[in-house]
Amino acid sequence: MSKMSYYDQVQEAADAIRSRVPALPEIAIVLGSGLGDFANSLGAATMMPYAELPHWPASRVIGHSVGTVRGRTIAALAGRAHLYEGHEVGRVAFPVRVLGLLGVKTLILTNAAGGVNTGFAQGALMVIDDHINLMGHNPLVGENDERFGPRFPDMTAIYSSRLRGIADRAGRANHLSLPHGIYVALLGPSYETPAEIRYLRTIGADAVGMSTVPEAIVARHMQMEVLGISCITNMAAGVLPRPLDHGEVMATAARVRGQFIALLEGIIGQL
Image (cartoon, rainbow, N blue to C red; front, top):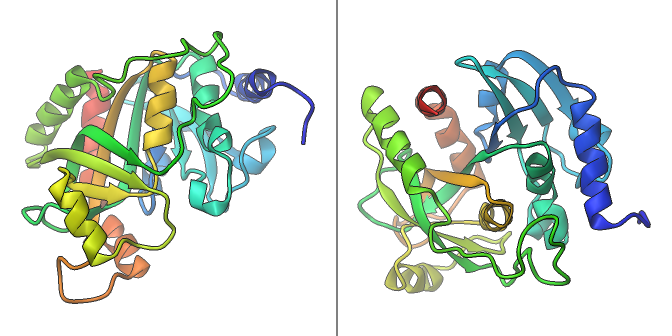
């Protein structure tokens, strides 16, 4: 383990990216399971495998790209580290900290999620209005570094109403009906039981997953504007009379690839 402070590690990773790209991004997108193809749509992209970036959490996924979409410079993270992989919560939040030090002001978080709301169709793209953190972890626990943000950041509007409105307009322009809902994050990696899904529905959940919330908290701590989008890749346990299968998650994400890319491009075009 490096003896550098956490802040210095974040700064070193940000400097490594800064030295390799011709322009710094103001917009960043974290791409969830099966949704990484968007990174391939960036123009004039600089690709950086995560393994080449100092202190970056180890991951089997592809890496970091900086390129252009609709004339805007975008950072796209194809995949993320998860708590269930054994990472500490500070490592899971590390990429978002780096994006903040690079000057990113707008963060779009995407994920594959299970549908808790029985009115959702498999393959729907849900705009996250709010979240419930049941992961048992918060990335702000421990000594606060004021260079990142305040000790007690407000989370009243963690997902920007302005960005949600932009997403709705981009959806209408692409003939997509975008439901809104509450995302609940659990630790994983096992899928939820039917009893747990009934509990989540009772407390107001519309979708459930194993990511996104630590990143959203850290982004707001650093005063970024956050938009969250869940791809409802499967119906949660007990909703349909069959077991859950990760292959179904990936297949559904692949099926909605075109809609997902069109929606993101439409959102970026309005920022």
